[in-house]
Length: 135
Length: 293
Image (cartoon, rainbow over all chains, first blue to last red):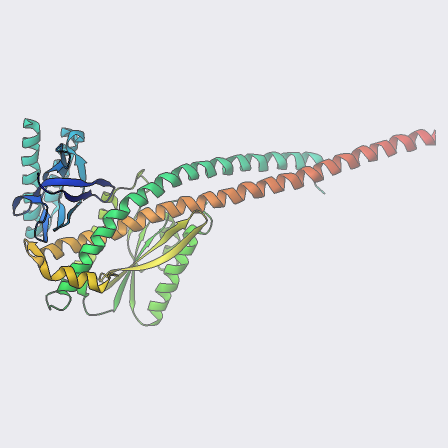
């Protein structure tokens, strides 16, 4: 059995998880990555997506995060999410609201660079929407 | 000497006031608990953010390409004061202590020949500062309609601050709010948010900075984190402020309730005394009337 390490998922509003886990899959900006114990120290930004946490007991829980970054050390992993919710609490409506908010922001965006970033964000949200609805 | 009727109506009015202050105290106590919980819930995030940023900034401090949010513009000419106050009054010295601190700071900067710009958060601070620094106020945010402060509210404020910064409108930003110490003590605090300052243990920073792998790159992460850090600092300040506000309101209303109680006692005493005096007076009149017969 794989070694356990400390995983923490925090959003500005609250601490969602702080537990011993064996495996965490995070949606990093450069592609999904699986973190296990004794991972090389890495710092990465994350994009909106699903974080899948495998607890030491073998149970798997899923969380939906909307951007943020992760701080990975050999002894633990901290995920600072801009906002995060357990996957089973997320409803299509809240996602839809976020998509609309992002859309609105694109329309108001001034600089092209900002706009591209937002469009990317929106694409990820939409993708997320598709995935969750299918599930 | 007020008449009996006057005294009676005054007692009634003080009693009504006491009822209101008592109710406000209880409401404040309930809201305080929730505000305190929210402030505590935000703490882990802020702490970790601070830790990560401290190690990142230590690593990039020397380089010339350090982001402006971290290194500053190199000047200290234009100051932005972000003053966060409450939406309402009736909270003792809560609003005035924050405003006094901000005003002293602003006057000191002005006397040094610096330019001062003010962004007010909260209606009370805006009303009062507008009197003294009408031309200096550049923006005003109110959360009057907001029931539960969320990160999005803080993000809104942060975005305005960052917009101004990116346009080169100011060099240094300082945040004013009341730090929550306990129900009876809230300390008005000034905190510099741009350029960012971190109280990091030097050793821990040096340890971790060297071996990290960064994805995508160190600069990009810093660039994304620093604005978020500004938002987080503001969020934290707003939450602390909120808890402080209810703490101050609770103790102010507690005082008011007690004062009203004292006042009622005093008024009742003089009411009874006067009633007795009147009875005595009437008795004397009857007796002396009877004797004259």
